[in-house]
Image (cartoon, rainbow, N blue to C red; front, side, top):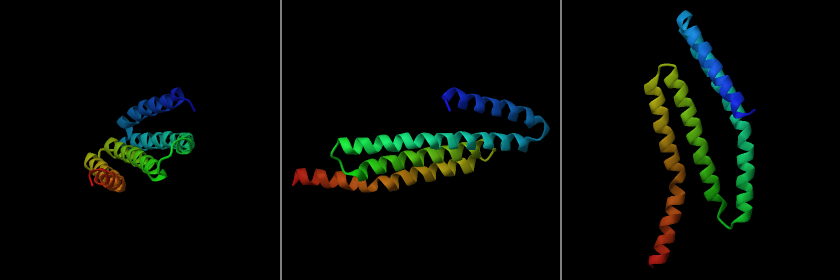
Length: 128
């Protein structure tokens, strides 16, 4: 699907959700969540292109594959946390959405710690 198709799905869902909000508010939330999931699944299909590109980059440069894998994990955590947080905020649970964002940030920090340690070891090797 193209970006235009996805944008049309999002706009149509938002307009329909607005119409449902006056009748039954929860239907609008369900519709927005369904459209978000559809968009998420189409986004996941694009993930194959990203992983193939990362594999090519790994073959072109001599770098430990752990670094690129960690970068991919960090991007995935960021997208998933943002998606879940947005759904919670749209449903009226902003505090839950904020907690998901905080957990996502902490998860990214935890995943990146081995890279930080490797960087510090490299700097330590230059200074010794």
